[in-house]
Image (tube, rainbow, N blue to C red; front, side, top):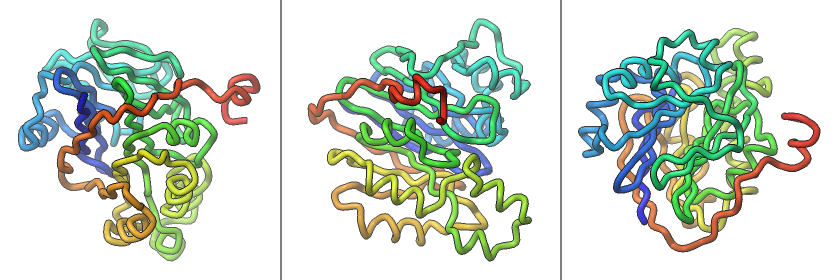
Length: 276
């Protein structure tokens, strides 16, 4: 079994990530227009007909701006929590709208999608792991801090889209307002290069083959800076910086037979409540 992954766009101007096999695929978020999604998939020779579901992480516009048209035009089911749907004010066809719950797997053909909570300033934010046979692909963006949910799921991934939003010195010395700076680094905003690197170094699986660094800030980061930072310590993991201007290449993940561990909530967090 081979999985195919690509970033169609990644950044505050729109986020959309593709994970699929030979028969079906899912999109995580749809923050670029339907037209751009179609064009970029066509250039990558990815068929929109294989997209069987769109999973929405949260209601911010850079994650949902294209979903209504894309779902309606191609009759693609959308998976979204009721809280996120209410906050988003999206107009989705009722028969194409589905709810998901953290740690309750959703099966789309041979793909299994598991959502889990994360720290972000949205109504009901989630990240996702897409699994097929023995392989796990995680989408970890818009994460204010690396909570136990994130660490546990990241440690089981063969590949991941990981937010590396800002360089701490660039943010501190940049032109953003004090309030915006506090929001970004305040624990429910975004993950810094340093935080992302620590997650990678401490919790990556020995079999992680690809890391796509995602959701880079246009003002407080650079692709060269973050690629250099991670590449020096990546070992055999291929480091890719996902662009905010164009699609990435399609990367192929081959099933090497490592066992998939059960994606379950951390017991301590499950018992005491989220983010304790």
